[in-house]
Image (cartoon, rainbow, N blue to C red; front, side, top):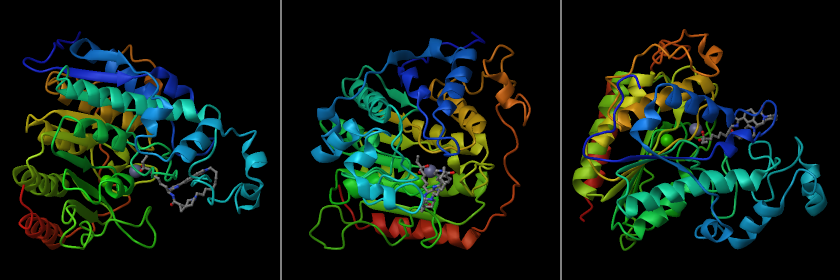
Length: 397
Ligand code: ZL4
Ligand code: CA
Ligand code: ZN
């Protein structure tokens, strides 16, 4: 197994159902469930599955999904098909491209495709299963690369997300854990999770993202957006937003990440952590604009793992599938403590090996020094760190 052994003293579980891979958002839609096929291909060919408990995840039930989502929205998702959608909602046909987003957020970003509800139930079921394994202490680190769909709202699909598996998983964790820390390194703002826990002091949401209110989706998440304004609201100051400019590199990201996450853990004292590892913050991403390398992205996982708290690791965005697979395979190796053992050369027998030809058959191609130069100054970074420190100094646990 390339010298890969089970981690000593802790258990890692991998929650996945390959049935998610077969779903398609549409020809040119950037979200490609196939990236999960590639990820699995690397995890298996490196032999990393032998170091984890692997679970074939089941589909979440409608009742489980309705723990967060509105019943009529869940019903809608469960019956909508590409064939009946225009019959049910003729007004959708009048939208500019195909259909307008007036109904439950459906549109170009969130199309109704074949098997949509099955797809949603599967990725959500995996996150709920993973959270349960952490709750009953059968697992210390639980991984669901098919989850991390952070934009979905109570009754609205948004940004390629229909069911918010992260919210469902956190609700599960809150049954056993007094405080949950949510960290989001996807290049987009984790608005759906933030909104769901906006008014509670039991969940702290921390999102790092590109922020440009006018042009970059979803346009929310400025530094000043820290929770409800009213002093009596328990959620006040329990939301942390880290807005960034284009081109941030590994070094400044790691420095910023550590200087934000460390005080959050010291002051909030979470009893469980959820880490959303959206891989669209890598350089060369089709939708992203950062300059992170696989190692820079993975450093966030290593750092969070270092606190030794029960950890749920989920995927998220990532639109250059081969690099998504590299990042999540590397991060799987970090979870099982095998990152220093792994050969950076991809195994010869990797299925779909040809997908990795472009940058060479390595786990760590150079993804920095791309189109974007780093538009985040040292002063920007220090200002964010100070803002977060000041904000945290107002809360007590
Ligand atoms: C596409 O080619 O910024 C969807 C979406 C579909 C196929 C054919 C339709 C062509 C890029 C994106 C028209 C597409 C118009 N197709 C899309 C304001 C927008 C309205 C919709 O990583 N148009 C919306 C969402 C973002 C917007 C990002 C990130 C998810 C996550 C977690 C979600 N939406 C402008 C765009 C294409 C498409 C090509 C697209 N959509 C790029 N960015 C968006 O955080 C998983
Ligand atoms: Ca983010
Ligand atoms: Zn994203």
